[in-house]
Image (cartoon, rainbow over all chains, first blue to last red; front, side, top):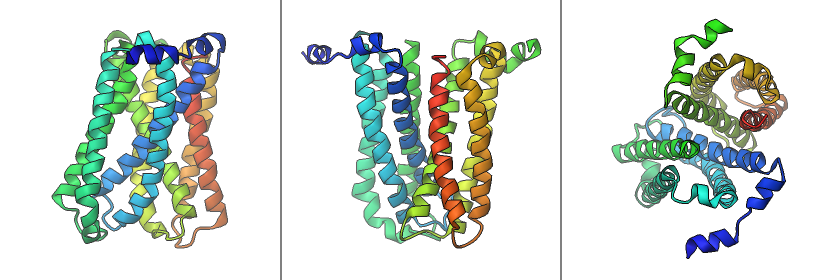
Length: 157
Length: 146
């Protein structure tokens, strides 16, 4: 049923008709992903203890808005990409893995905001980050790297 | 160019099933750090409650330098695998000068961030670097289509 709904929204004809449709959507999708991953990586590295003199809360404010922007760009353009070749993407193991890793990464962000953010003032700067913040940052890097890697591997299936 | 094509890293890319994919993933991850650094510089330069410029410089510079080195190496591995194909590719020929310009702009920003107050020139360079970083992504993606 969900497949039929997506099939009804197909934009396959645009991809066939306009030569620059796919490269444009793909470039936008990449830009979103790179913005998202890069900003998250810089913040996670700070959580892991790199540059301990830099304020965690201020860095978070700088990076989080661009991570959200990157995520929105990636989700919207990714949906369009899905609708260009639904049969190809539907059930692609790499896409399934990518979505699973993405959900896990979002759950990790949720846990971070619930349990780590309230304690952030205690390790804002010039103090070693506590183990739970390091753990959250480390898991985040692993999960988002997996998202990017699986996204790239979609083309190989 | 034959010696490049026969190098171990070029053959790893062309003759193994996962060589190309792994190199591509590492290349993409390094470019994402370059983009994030450009974004961070712009965001920092326009933020009201600004972090100390020297601290930002100290934090960001190692990431920028490492990411550039990895992007250049992984990019070179691709080039070594199919040098003739890349030299004929207009998107690649546009991407290379942009990447070099981006590296030079990053050095200028790094120097500008040595002082406690950011000059207007440095702020403008951060915006230019971000624009070129985004254009580099586009050119990189278009290599496959041209």
